Image 1 (cartoon, rainbow, N blue to C red):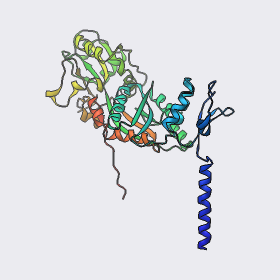
Image 2: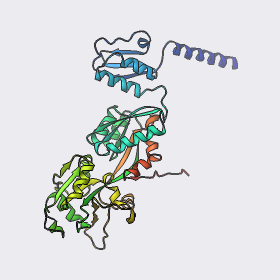
Image 3: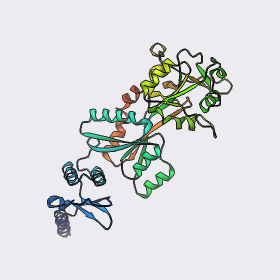
Image 4: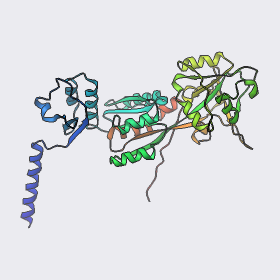
Length: 372
């Protein structure tokens, strides 16, 4: 019996070696409508790559190396072809680790500078990891890119919907979603403005255009000039969803070209009411009064219209506890079986915290559960 088993094991071993030697490796595919004219897979490339014209698929055998990718790139400058090559390579890298390889991520426009900074910090820690970021106009766009396989990780200010999760389950993709940071939308005014606290109904009225003069809020008889910096435009949807009631719409503010122009305008104009992300106002919102810089503008506290309510400002404690009413969370959403995507998400939850703090955001702690 023992000799029979040994014979069977030996047969299977030689059979597997024979399959490997004959090129029986896992086949990978990616959509490609047309193979560019003149592209031919000859020699060693022909042993590993092919194109199925009837199914419109670019195909490869086994995992790919950087050399493979570059050799395919050299065959054509066609953008659609190169995008397919990139996807084929990125999803099947031979040498990928949690801190090494190439990773494409997508993010909502309002958090693009934050994610760019996170990618730079990751590459400084782990120089063999290359992160490419792709901006989407909205969380829906970031999620769609993840669903389409264009990216392997999406940073979003919401979790996936039930419908989106069902899509990944149908594709047998196991998705992880982790809360990594929280941002606040700040209302700011000129330092000389006598108003420090704004009741939430008044804030709603001022932002929706029902109140247009500071006098109606207890200030001077001057028109309210609503402004926002270009980089913070995405927070208007947060204001719409978190602060304004059904049927109310944010009055279109004057859009200033960047954060520097926003700061200058706030400093020079006592009538301005600014809307911005905490990332562009954190120095005026320091937890310690002695370290708070309000030479350009000051942050407003919001007061709920209820008995015994206390004014709540966009300060770290209130943001972390979710007491401040205009916040949004940043999630890392990714396929948990993709090594480098796991590595970047883990970095965001630990080593990346200084990046969030330096940009005025609140890093969120990961909850650790111990199984009994």
